[in-house]
Length: 131
Image (cartoon, rainbow, N blue to C red; front, side, top):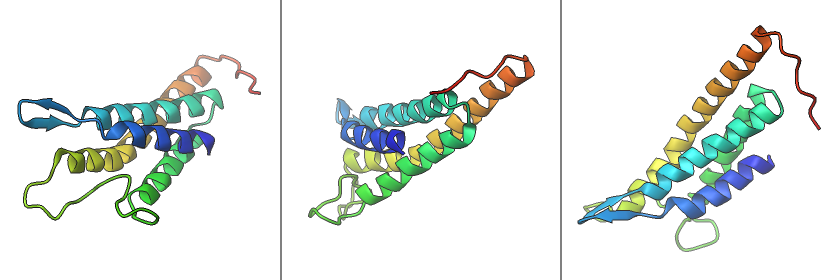
């Protein structure tokens, strides 16, 4: 739970960073936030030696991102996923990439975690004792 909340809060603070190449906005912050959330979910799964916990971490992150994309307390949500303008600003692209990229990051983390843990089991390594 803590890992998912941490990934959501830190990733959301990072996702809105846009780098401009000429007049084109590149959502570099959103890409880094997706990589970060994938790394957190993978870390939790490998640390606890359970791919399901990697999925739970990603699901908690996605749930918190869903709450952040609603305008519950502020006039504007923390994650902007749409605008009424004809041409969408780069912040909308970053918000969509962060929100939907999180789902891909969770799946990737679970698959990588399951593969690594399966390889360890097949190699006959004893499980590492957790805290």
